[in-house]
Image: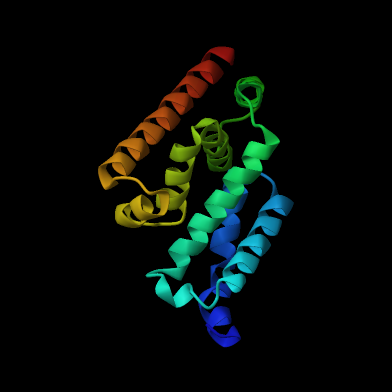
Length: 171
């Protein structure tokens, strides 16, 4: 793959890779750095990229793996997730919950999901991948992807319901 082909096939993936990395890392600067690392890795493999069925899938898998390595180095703990839950519970609303507040809560709830469910929600509901592509990216069975997505969505619904009940009784 030459420079022009690389610019046509890989560089347009920048925003999609950034959104995915940002969702996993929860840090804009680290996500930007991660996308740059992915580009460097792909550029170093440019002679072999034609062997892959989908350069986009390779880029997404590379992004995911680099992000997971980064998260392991950060040693994310259960305590961090518990703090996020506490922040959600302690958040105050003076007026009716509007759409942006609900979206914000959903993003917070998504962050409490297990990594695999978070990735599946990101790829399916935000990036628009189909089940077959997600299964390939995450090296999973397509039915397992569907089950994981269903469970993730159920947790989100339950958390939103609990949050609404809490706010109702609080007011």
